[in-house]
Length: 66
Image (cartoon, rainbow, N blue to C red; front, top):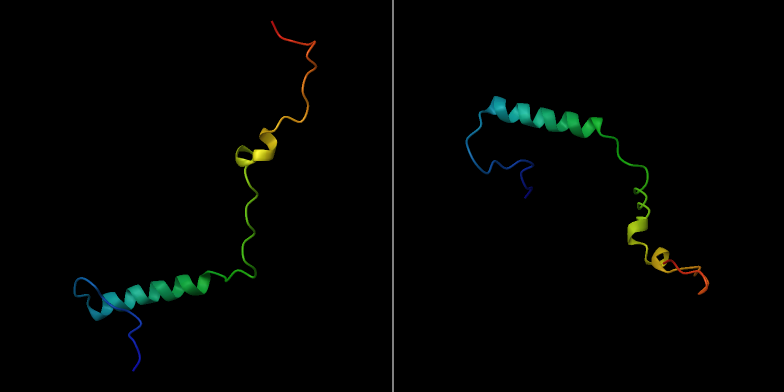
């Protein structure tokens, strides 16, 4: 037993309305190319990089702001 490809949840579309919706969905699916690879993960934002929050150099104690 095969499942229906489209199920109408609400309303009673005419055959022409249903055909129009399916035609649009088929056109969109054909126009959208499938990605060759999985998209690359975005680089983490420097705002979230904890390593950048650690001070790498400290001022000598003799230099103080007044």
